[in-house]
Image (cartoon, rainbow, N blue to C red; front, side):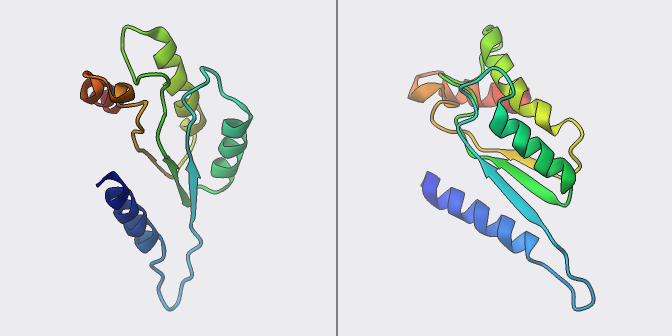
Length: 124
């Protein structure tokens, strides 16, 4: 079910981005990145992405999950907040759109409080 939902989401995103008029051709980029939640600092991959998206505001960034290792966002755990902040920091001056898709680690690594971890991430 998750795979079908993801494929549907990507299809809608591509469909939305491919709309052009006869008189105007629109260039649009989609940046996909995943597994960013291991580090609590902005690493080289995120800095490279930051440079790309700031140079191309006519774009969308999709974080493909596992945004906060090992078990999602817990407001009591400062390290989990640092991990999501590392990703959010690259979006500070970005003029495009950004989406975060929760991965299995964002769902508290399939533990009982998984839904709350995802809701925490959404709220944050």
